[in-house]
Length: 403
Image 1: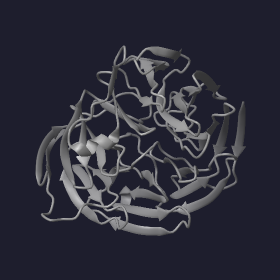
Image 2: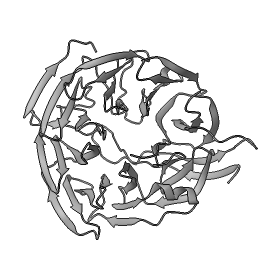
Image 3: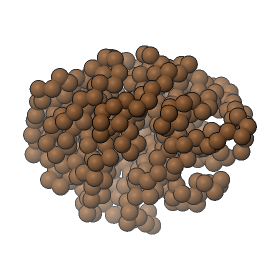
Image 4: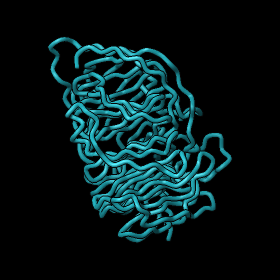
């Protein structure tokens, strides 16, 4: 069932590293792989005797990475890395995965240095953290690697679970607490749905009722959803359930979940022919009832705008510069927090735009137009820190332990 709402709110040590980059699109407009990238050298220099970075953040810029202190936003290190870089939490309080042309490389953000751990594979794609496990999906090979992120501190690649999809594709995988592995189905030309494998990688469930499958999110009760071009596909208690969009084409390609809420947050697009659709509606999917609610925010947003708060709040950074705090159960915008100036999403998904990264009670928001980065307390709405950086940033991530 579908309910539609419109709100009235207008809304280790010094290191030299050479890496050539050709990255895959992970959350672009069409969700398809991209071979764009650049080659170059990387050099990371760490001041002798410097203290470890507390709660490190990693922000990308054209030419490298900034590592920042999570409280003060003080810049702790700059790592040169030419090309378009992608970063994701590795699942512990120290590490971040950086995508390169040869695969995933592990950055110890706390110690501001790359490690020797790497997962080789063309077109590294999604990194998923769930139930104390981290899962990597390499689009160019279809290879899945799942492991306990606590083992990354040992300095050696963790021994974990592997699986290879029938055909390479822009996909994603997540391991559940019972050992089941949910992973997408598709080819380089067409993506159709998802399968679930048992601990021995034997198929347990399958659904091919999810055209253009892209992205994933987990909700309270370990309901896992993947996005489709006509809704979402939910896996819960051993079964798939399709939640249809109200439109023939209703793409939910990017989602954000929380173990504090049974409701998933998703984007929502309805024009398959648009060069760039700038949607103003979000989707809220109740995994208990398989109901999809549309909420019009009165402002557009991008694929880097979605997040979840510490209590399960749905968070959306609008192009009007405000961060909206939304009750996922009702769709009501409970708070609007002005953070950055008004902005417009660029046509090229790799171009910089404000990005949202949430850790605990703090929302971090980048403002590339001013080369700035801000920290906001979600409870009070107060800005707790801001920094101006030498270059405008693009992607924003950090070390996050747990889910």
